[in-house]
Amino acid sequence: MELRISDKISKIAPSITLAIDAKLKQMIADGIKVYGFGAGEPDFDTPKYIRDAAIEAINKGFTRYTAAQGTVELRKAICGKLERDNGLTYNPNQIIVSSGAKHSLSNAFAAILNPGDEVIVPVPYWVSYTEIIKLNDGVPVLVPTKKENNFKMTKQELLNAVTPKSKAILINTPNNPTGSIYSEQELRDIAEVAVANNLYVISDEIYERLTYDGKKHISIASLGQEIKELTIVINGMSKAYAMTGWRLGYAAGNEKLIKAMSSVQSHAVSHPNSITQYASTTALNGPQDDVHKMVEQFAKRRTYMYDRLSAMKELKCIMPEGAFYVYVDISSYMGRELCGQTIKSSLDFAQILLEKGHVAVIPGAAFGTDSFIRLSYATSMETIEKGLDVFESFIRENLK
Ligand code: PMP
Ligand code: GLU
Image (tube, rainbow, N blue to C red; front, side, top):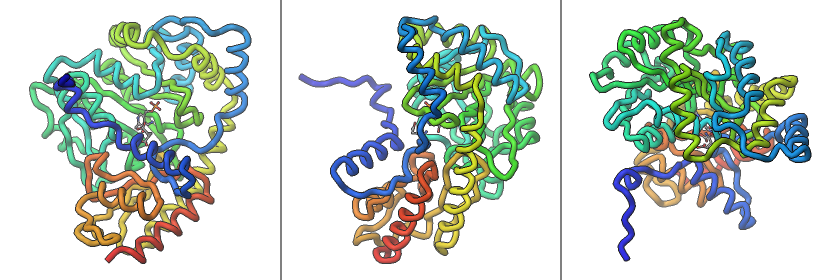
């Protein structure tokens, strides 16, 4: 029998970040010592008060269906967080919780896109944006950014990308993979274009808590009533609370949009896991000391990794201001031989490095810039030290 996959799905590539992570985990399971700088996943345990809350939820029978939009308690806790941290006032009807920020993004695009609608995406971009947009019948319009602007999209670059088919702009700050943070003025410029052209802004703020050197995260939605109406703020528990496997993301926006997202969700997964919702409520309402402690650790690892990579003279990297990645320009490696194979792309390089050097990194091709690789420092200092030793000597010995 001929298997016929839909045209839409045939055009989607599986997540490279998750594929490399799966390969790394398989190599470890096979007894191979591998150093993982691949998928961005905090190595810390979920803080104890959050784990305790989940156990309490199970024991008290909080194990049934919840409202599709999420529990009122959790949505109230999210309103409290948005007010406290971002100066944003929403009511619980303007919030929806989903199974991870990835799912929140998917619901958001499902709610706003008609076939052929364009979404403006600055490059480099996180691997899943383009595929989620395509899955929801949209067309990603890729806008290359410049290194001298720290890979942030300027007002002019944005204006050049706007067409009559434009529906939304995607902003990710702090950024994955570059770690750049948009300033208030840069966000005001984007907001001005969005308002003038009636474009939605999907603002992915999942790395908001992970900022360094006193840099501050600003939500574009907080810059005025008009831009707030057009913005869907996306955030979640994965990164700040080391809760990747729990799968809890959320979105805040105009009540009509949130209702539409809730309608999509009600038919797809009903709602995120009740136990995760209960624990996330405790996480957001509870003491935030654990988050601060994790950020302190990330800050130390960031400096160490950046210094080590910058000392390798053929590599160029920018100092990340937030998130937990260093984005490294490997263009000087292109066309050369590594272990006897010619490096023609970041995928070639990452593959040889993983298979022969036992170091996992993500190829820049996943983020739309093929002459880069991304290393995550969401892993222990020991792994970073030893892994970079292995990385450095592998390159020294095998790159011709
Ligand atoms: N946005 C960005 C920029 C990310 O890096 C990730 C990776 N986890 C997500 C969204 C999705 O996060 P999650 O689904 O785990 O909440
Ligand atoms: N967002 C993380 C990353 O970029 C986790 C993997 C994923 O969700 O794609 O590595």
